[in-house]
Image 1 (cartoon, rainbow, N blue to C red):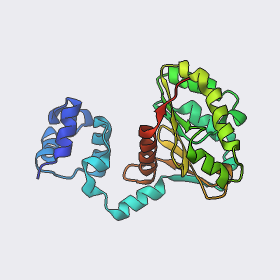
Image 2: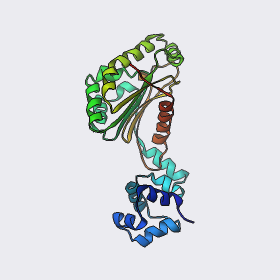
Image 3: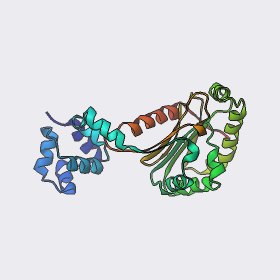
Image 4: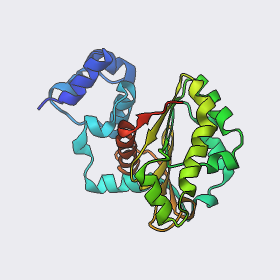
Length: 247
């Protein structure tokens, strides 16, 4: 049975099976068998093909990932667990911001702590954007019901709404940078997410507790794992529902 996903990925890349074979140093006849007969490559070859075609290995060969291997891969994605956001070293935040080369994506209600702990965060974002990093920022609508309810849940009343307004005031100068996108969301946020390329800090929200008192998972994407991708699918849903911020 042919591997139609691999065939389609080759077509999208504008590459033939022979060309792929040359690039990954595998006999083109073997590559053709992967495509036409659905033969399963060895893991090292699967990884090289996925990297060459810029595809997920699990997408090209889903049968290679059963529940046991997915569970192992997901566990391997957990780099660390922090009991609260304040226990994350400032050096880790700085390293993640400075080392991103593809994307920085943030969704939170306010995340005003970034400006409190990293006074130069706006300059870092601007520098990264001008270096070609895609930056997407989604913060809460200060006037929405979700922000008001979260403020009540955390027993801080309108303070959360005020923090959201402060964050938008902080980042307004960034909106002049074409490479930086910012949107305003009104979702019931269960997890603030800070994504830097393949790393993600996921600050989960617990009822009645402020975000800075709640645990944070440090995830690093592993092929075949589900945790990183599951969180990012949530980010994409929030991003799609958010409105472009207008100054």
